[in-house]
Image (tube, rainbow, N blue to C red; front, side, top):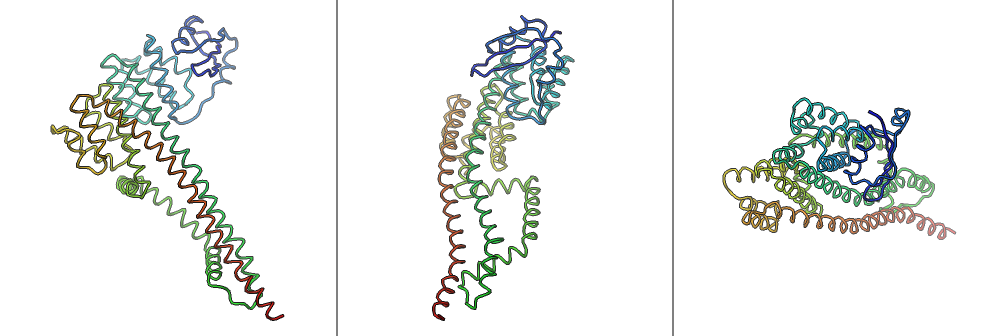
Amino acid sequence: MPFFKYVARDKSGKMIDDVIESVSQEDLANSLQSRNLFIVSIGPVSQVKKVKKMQRRYHRGVKNFDLIMFSKELATLLGAGVTLIKSLDILCKQIESQTLLQAVEQVKKDVEGGYTFQNALKKHGKIFSDFWIHLIETGEASGHLPQSLEQLAGYLEEAAELKKKITSAMVYPIILMCVAAGAITIFLLKIIPIFSEMFKGFNVELPLLTRIIIAMSDIVRKYFLIVAGAGVVLFFAVRKYISTEAGRFQFDGLKLKLPVVGSLVQEIATERFASGLSTLLKSGVPILHALEIAEKTAGNKIMEKELRNVKTAVRDGKSMAQVMQDSALFAPLVVQMIGVGEEIGELGKMLERISVFYKERVNTFVSRLTAMFEPMVLVFMGVVVGVLVVAMFMPIFSISSAIKASG
């Protein structure tokens, strides 16, 4: 097939400049328009292999953005009436993740060989989670695959946005903590030893605070490599233990018990559960399957255990609200809204409202926590550095007084 170079703009006005293989120029134009792109220019390209190779850049791994764009573009193409195989063929020419590209190419071959789309995706479980598989399965069974993919893209986008906000909010406090730790380390390793050597030349008894600080400096300098090495070993040992089932369960439980931060962790877990379960139910996934998937994607072992209990109770004929009210992990508001949703048959919509409510709470909580944490770190850093400076200058005043007395 011939290659064509096109320049187009998306809805946000971003310019897209690419070279792509297509049956004809008209076929490519129709494909671009089905993706809601405004075509600026389009035409055949000679010696395209060299150009294409230069323009195509791949990255390793699969980012959230890759999966979001894949599901969005596939939904657009299928919604425009393009066949699944043709849609996958088009997307293979645009995917920037090498890992995802290899997976999609294999999925395309499997679909051509007679596999259903969801069975083809199952072979790549490390990329496409159970959440993906069940939504695709429901979309294929109901004949509404584009809608399922749009809901999937929306869920992934919201989850990625929330994670980005939390990460961005925590960057500055972490930088402040690193600066404070670095300043204290420099004082103990470099500055205090200079004062200590200077004080040895004077026959003056040092104040208690000064002696304590100098002793701390001596210990840190003498055992710095040992302490640093032990810290690194401890870090990796804890990380290894947390990667186990029992370790992760204890770690997640500890996070929920932490003051202030525990409430944030609980609300994030609630939002994630409500958002995922809402998306699954609105896509037509049966409640038991939806709870099983939500359990696996909860992101917190304590939440997983509670959802497992809910799933067991629902299988036995009980309502979700009836079981959740006995758990300390679910707030009364969540239990009440789920109970109302079950009574009126709108559980998916109620869960969506819970998700929106907690998303706003998490955003507000993170903003306030950051605003509160920043001055706390600055005050801590000021107090510690101030104590170190005072401890070093106190003997100077004593030495000055002794010199005046002797004079």
